[in-house]
Structures are given as C-alpha cells and as structure tokens.
Amino acid sequence: MSEDAVDADAVRHVGDLARVALEESEVELFEAQFADILGYFDSLDEVPEVEAESDLVNVMRPDERRPSLDQDEALDNAGETEDGYFKGPRVS
Amino acid sequence: MSADHNAFITETSIDPTSDGPLSSATVAVKDNISTAGVRTTCGSAMLEEYVPPYDATVVKRLKAAGATIVGKANMDEFGMGGTTETSAFGPTENPRARDRVAGGSSGGSAAAVAAGKADLALGTDTGGSIRNPAAFCGVVGLKPTYGLVSRYGLIAYANSLEQIGPIAPSVEETAALLDVIAGPDDHDATTHQAGANAAYAAAADGAVDGMTVGVLRSLREGADQRIVDVFEESVAELEAQGATVVEIELDSIEHALAAYYVIAMSEASSNLARFDGVRYGVSGDYEGDWNESFARAREAFGEEVKRRVLLGTYALSAGYHDKYYKKAQDARAWVKRDFDDAFAQADVLASPTMPVLPPEIGDSLGDPLELYRIDANTVPVNLANLPAISVPAGRAEGLPVGLQLVGPAFGEHRIIRAASALD
Image (cartoon, rainbow over all chains, first blue to last red):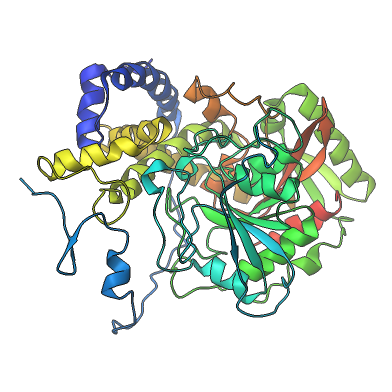
C-alpha cells in the first residue's frame, strides 16, 4: 500500500487534471486498483540514482516551406468546421 | 467466436505501387498504423470513424515492395493490453489455441499470420506487443532496435519505447519483411542509418556455432515450469548446434516492470491529450466550455485507457514526479547499463518470451496489476532500446511457447541468426 494511497477525491482530481469525465462506479473501481498499482510502483524507491549516458544527437534541417495536407484533407475528420477552420467549444 | 478469429477490424485490399521483394505477398497491418483512405481505429471507439489522409512510412514501403495489404489488424485499445481483449471491437481468438487469447497488443497481426489470413504482418511493440502474440500464436515476431524503423504515421502511445516490427511464420520471412521497412526516414528524426541495405534475411542461416547464449536467470525462474521445460529443450538444441550457454543475472531487472509502466503511462497521458474531439475522434458536443466538452469526448476511451491516462497524469503531477517518473528514468538507465555489461559476456541473451501460457478469453481483465505482470520478460528490452525476437520453441499442454532472444543495439543480424537455428 502506498503511503499516499489515493482516495476517491484524489481519483476525481486526477480525472479533472486529465480531462476525463468519470462515472461514480469508475471512481470506486480506480480507487481500489490505484492503491494496488501505486503500491507496486513504490518498489522504485529502492532504485539508486543512475547517471544516464544519452546517446541522442540533435537532428536539424533547414526551416523551409514544404508540401503538406491541403485544408480540406486536414479538416476531413473534424466533427464541426466553419469557413475552412476547425470549430471548437467556447474556451470559458 | 467466428471462424475468422476476429483478427481484422477492417478487411480491405490496398494494392502495391510497384513490384518488389514482396510481390504476391499479403500483409496484415496493425490498426494503429496509418493507411490513407482506410480507417485506422487503434482498436478504440474514439477513432471508429477516423480515416487517415496519409500513409505511414512503413505502409509506403510495403506498397513499394509489392505487398498487398489485406486488413487492419485487431489490437488492444491504443496498444494498452497483452491479450487484445481491451479492443473496442472484441477480442481476437488464438488460431492455435481454441477459446484462448491471441496475446497482445498486436493480437490481430499474429493471429492473421497463424491462421493464414495474411502471409506476413506488421505489429508494434511498446513493452512486448509483438513478441507476446507471436509467442502465444506460435509464430515469429521481432521488435527492432529503437530507431531502426520509422514511426511516422504510427499513432503514438509511448514514443520513447515503441517500434513497428515484423511478424511472420518463419525467421527468414520475418527478416525479409524487416529488410523492407527498416532504414532512415526524414519524417522521423529518431531513425538511424543502420537498417539501410542491411540484408537481414541473409542472416537467417542458422550459423549459431561459436556463439555465446546468455540465459537470463531471473526471467527463466519467474516463468511457469511447463514453459521452462520447453525453453530448456530449445537452449539445449542451440548448445547441440555449437553454441556456448552461460547464465546471466541482471540486478536491475526486478525494477524493470514498475519502471516500464510508470514511463509508458506518463507518455500515454501526454500523447492521448490530442484526442479532444475537435480535429478527429468522437465529439464531446459543444454544450458547456472547452474543458467540459473535452472531458465528455474522452468518455469514449475504454477502461484500461482511462486507467493509464489517469495513472500517468498522477505520476507526472506536482509532488509525485520525483517519486515515480524520475525514479523510473533512473531504473531505465540502470537496466540499459546492465544489458551493456551482459553483452560483454554473451552474444545474445535468452529467456522464455512469456512467463505464462495463453489465458482463456475472459480470464485476464479483472485484475490489471496481474495482467501487467505477464509483461515481465518483454519490457526490459524496450527500456534499453534493444532488439529482440520471439521464435516458437515448442508446446506445453498443447499450447505454443515462445523463446526470446535479445541482441545489442542494431544487432538484429545476430538474433536473426540465432533464432533461425531453432526454425
């Protein structure tokens, strides 16, 4: 069991942060499962600090205009569009 | 379960664009790989009607090599699962084990090959999703080194872990398909020069004589005894053909599974934020403000996807980032270093691919943590960015058993060579 075991309010809070609407039944289910899963993740406390050697390099290219999807193709999967734009819900 | 095993979400026929090494070959493509004009669902209700406007690089390469794409293969929703039971389109049945799962998340790809519905298949492997269904269905599957195959057009789940790779009836055919898809791509900055003209199929020559095979002790000991027995017979077979067998212990490996899930869930929580119901996917209707609409659209995700997005959000949230995500990155670096050391002692590393036999359909979904544990032998390879292949080792209780061989980064030739000795 995690020392910071999540309760139902914590599940709802994370649901809000992640923008996922949850049914009450899902909150109950996740509350129990998260305790198990996070308890298992607590085993990472035993892992020492390890210096990671990155073998990554930056990949650059000239910032030049290139062909892309046309407007119709880009809008094709959208539920709602207006005058060639995506239409979204109001922001506040 | 229908006679077709529910291997495909969408049956189709996409013609080749030219002749090539795969002329006359039929290929199943996992349904998280974009096909222009043919819907690509990721096994999710969210994308039930999504039709990509462009081809993934691997799809372009298949078509140019002469292949005909016959279907978009069933999968766990967004690749999140090991049994193809989290698919919104129903589970895939194992063609070689009636009423049992085909494995996952690329279950449809492996089942299509095992049932002869396609000659070859593409899957994707984030924590074992090619090797697991290959083992359960008794076919060959290869997870390439990170960066060997372009991910352009792959709908992302956990970018730092996942690779597209081949599934086929034999090691040689698997390697031949890898020859077609491997190599650098301007559209994916993580791709590597290795893989251009690499001639993988020619490495399937069975020449294991003189090779050192390191058995990963803790991964063998964690497996079902019936699987260990089959595994040991295959290792003895490699020894009989001239390989030297040594035992290897990796100290970090007991932390690999937890580290994998923290990283995969964290990346998933970020990647799946794009599904807002505005540009594609199920709309949350436009009552209320953006946040409310967004949260409603995402009710279309299945339970396992919600679980991972929430846990990933939690692991990255203020106060928990250092405890979970940062520690998982330390574990990842440790696993990588342990593998580097192991390759000073052995040419390839071996373990059972899966610690369990294929479960019956419907038996696995009740306890998510138990389901995560069946990935114990496959996830270390993804953390270390390494290549690995699963090859059929035999049967236990009449069910297919797979043997996993792991190689050093860009050491695909080596694992193909060793695996072909068991073909």
